[in-house]
Length: 136
Image 1: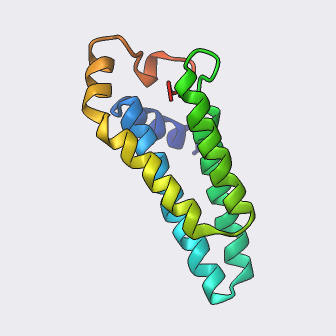
Image 2: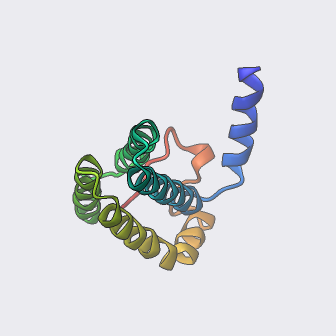
């Protein structure tokens, strides 16, 4: 059964560009942060812990895809992601949401150009690479 799930995920990923995959990760992080904020406001410690952990995991996942040695701008993005992770630890979800949305919007603005670079072969597609690394 796990094999079928892996196959479905692989097929889904093959249809996405790198930037689309990144935008999905940002969307999931934003939704998770919003859920953590709601849980905090409701005093639901169990859900707060769950969504806080999920948010942090998604942000770390985005961070792990940065190539900070090859691309200097990735260092700046890494710093912003670290700032967001700090806000999550402090349970300051409104600031974490704000900055995560700003990063997501920045990537959304360059989506068409990134898709074209991938189509032209200047950026390798996800399916042909060994990981889901991003430039920035």
